[in-house]
Length: 65
Image (cartoon, rainbow, N blue to C red; front, top):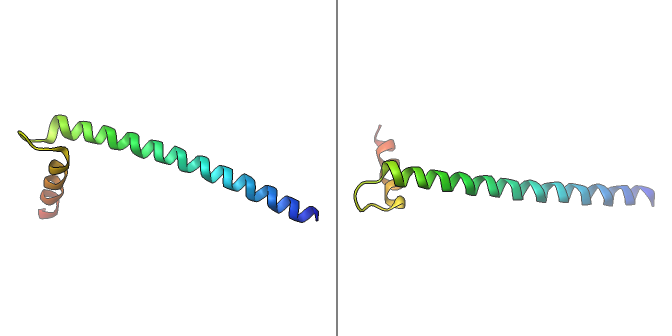
């Protein structure tokens, strides 16, 4: 009986840690994407080009080399 309580407690702790890690990871990724989009918008877009079009163009140029 005691072992099953320990296993349940351990699983509960593990689920909590994994859940918090995922939240932190999502926040960091979203923040990076915002910074990346701002940089591309400000420095790498050409006249009238959207951010998504600029990303596609940059990836195509990268593949050529």
